[in-house]
Amino acid sequence: MKFLSTKATCNSHGQDSSYFLGWQEYEKNPYDEVKNPTGIIQMGLAENQLSFDIMESWMKANPDAVSLKRDGESIFRELALFQDYHGLPAFKNALVDFMSEIRENKVSFDADKLVLTAGSTPANETLMFCLANPGEAFLLPTPYYPGFDRDLKWRTEVEIVPIHCSSSNGFEITQSALEAAYLEANKLNLKVKGVLITNPSNPLGTTTTRDELNLLINFVNEKKIHLISDEIYSGTVFDSPGFTSVLEAVKDQNLEDSDVWSRVHVVYSLSKDLGLPGFRIGAIYSNDEMVVAAATKMSSFGLISSQTQYLLSAMLSDKKFTSNYIAENKKRLQVRHDMLVSGLRNAGIGCLNSNAGLFCWVDMRHLLSSNTFEAEMDLWKKVLYEVKLNISPGASCHCTEPGWFRVCFANMSEETLNLALQRVKAFIVAATADQNKRTTHRRHHSMGHSMGHSRRMSLSKWVFQISAHEHEPER
Image (cartoon, rainbow, N blue to C red; front, side, top):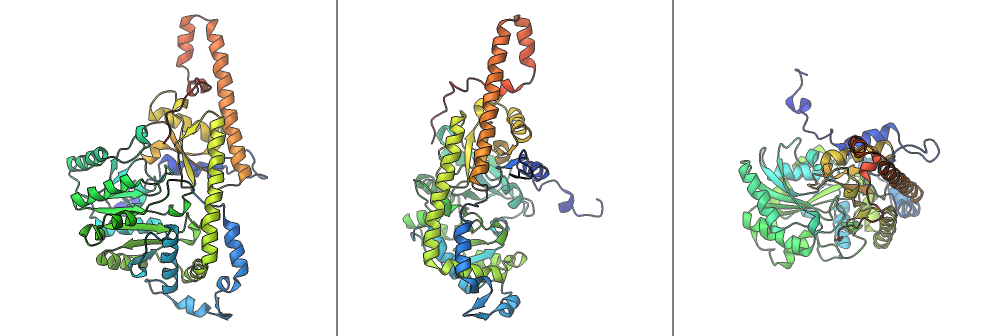
């Protein structure tokens, strides 16, 4: 230990979060339909596995792209030697066109303002390095993606100050919450350098409203700070209201000639929209020339392979493919989302109304033994070890209200999702029966015995009045 750096030995990576601990437990006992049918089902991983067949069909029909050929001739040597960290021009042009298409061409992107990175993780970290110094802060609305504690803070030493949002208005960002977070940062002697949002939201699965975007733009304009919009789920919007990019909102305010135009930055990736996290394709888009220049230099620490760029430049340049993929992928996400919501509703569990993403924000507050994060952790462990489902507790997303969980639906087969829902239903049925049995039992015993019994931890404490429970109005 004494021979290592502080960075290597410190515990600020966030790996001890329940978000990552759930993954570790899953890996010890992963569900497999044949080999391990009683294993843990992974519902804590936001992967899109619903539309691989569309891409596989395209690759079968375009063998030159897969085989690294151009007009039938191998370009292996050319790609093997290519190492310009600006990226292949053909890929950058195809990527910005795809980004515009997802946004219904309401926003156009300039390939010269795009910086390629090996996924959105280094994209967000690179922006932190470009926009803030160690000890300065960014404001993030809660709940937020647990990985941000690693991506934004670990190596940059930038601090995160939460913008506390509430279920009372569907976790929307408000002026008072923004001001409170800014004031809290000042109290902590932290200089605020910007606000970072995910749009669509991870973990809420909702698109940021136009009112929220205008509020954020006005706020960063007034405070003279940056606004980063992580839009890696922009192609997963399957229901109304539609998706509005932050750049579209800035444009509609006629702020393209103002200094705020250079302080709004977008992060994008193909990990979610195309379901290609293993290809490591991310990007930063900025109107600030110095940010683009600095980020391009930093990108040399995490480049996208030339063969990956070549394959995807061909795929994304095929407009027939992209239009079909975008439309069909959204339909499949809608079906899978509705399947999860309906199945949970049948088990007496509600979700926040959502229209995007690969997950639902699930309301299990009525299953807690008490309104505490300790009770949330107890319930999470019960679901993980007994129900055998890995879901992400709200505490790992810095939610201020115990009892919310992120549950993913696009990283498994329909049969596996049905099995997961069967397990949830069985859990609730068994818990309800146990509760009814114990209620009847208490009626025949003394009050003293009943009070003693109620102190013992049991499953019945997690479930009460399920059949009569009314969920709060959903967004």
